[in-house]
Each structure stands twice: as structure tokens, then as C-alpha cells.
Length: 205
Image (cartoon, rainbow, N blue to C red; front, side, top):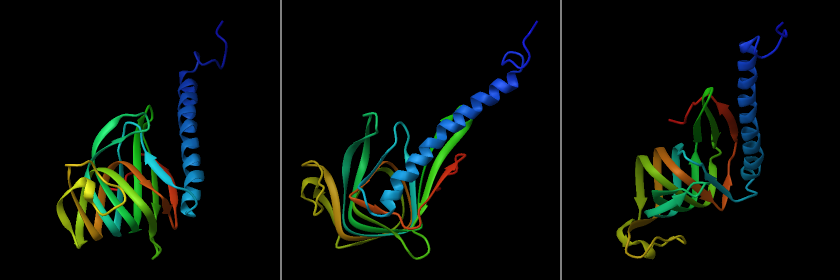
């Protein structure tokens, strides 16, 4: 005789249990992100975002910065994989209505984490910001720009390799910013009004 209530007798229960385990496994990721970024929101810790095997998106209605440079480079994901990127450095930056999102495929479909901050007239603040990006869109204004420099001679603290093409400027303003990146680091990242969400794949753009 078959035992009543076993996984073999009721495959729907087995599927539900598996689904529950997958969803629960995703929850600690969101909790960990909330705890770590809680310190970031208070300007308490340096921050580094590097996602293994996937890029993430950043958007903002406006970015204002000082001490900007850009040159070619290589960044690594958290498993050591190397990726060709454009390195952008900004000494001090504010981002209004910032959004950052990353999405992963799971057996249950797409699962994402979205972080928003900097609304209500209280923008995000960053110091020593460096972004390893592959795509950038927006309307940009540069102040005192120099184009065609040797990357080792830019005016920012972070510099590129000798002989590489680069540009720098004293100031930068980008509206309707949309950026795809492999990495973001900052000495201090103050996320005013931070909100962390676990999503079903919803992205910033």
C-alpha cells in the first residue's frame, strides 16, 4: 500500500516545497543588502558593488559632480572574471532620484534587487566615486574639459595606464542618466531615503 501524504503520492506538494526553498534562499540576500546599505546610507562605510556574471543598471534624473576623468580599463566581478570597461571617476557627486537594479534568472523566473534613494530634494552623495561601465546615456555638460590626454596624466587621484586615451574635466552634469555597469566603488556613499526591494525582475530602465 502507498503511504498517504508522501512526496511521491502528491507531486504538487513536492513542487511547492522546492519553490518555497528557492524563494526563502533569496530572502537573506535582500536582508544582507539592507543591513550593509543601512551603514552606507549613514555614510558609515566604504561601498563596492560587483555582481558575478551579470551587469547592473543605474539611473538618476540628474548627476552633478566635480573632478571627473574617463579612460579605458578592466574591472573584475566577484569571481575574478575580467571585463573591458570605460572607467569613470568623480571626486564628489550628487545623484537625484537614483535607482540601481540587478536581475538574476532562477528556476522560478527572474528575481531582482532594486535600490532607490535621493528623492524629495535630498540627493544621494558620493565621494571618491568610480564606475566601470559599458554603456552611458544622458544629456551631459562638462566644465573645463580636456580631451585626448594620456590616461596617466588626468587630474583625478585615480589614473589610467600610460599611453591610453582619456579625458577629464573640472565639473560634470548629466541629466536623464542611464548607465550599465560591472562595478561601482566609492569612499563614502550616502543613500538618503534608501529603499531596497526584492522584485520579480523590474529594472531601473
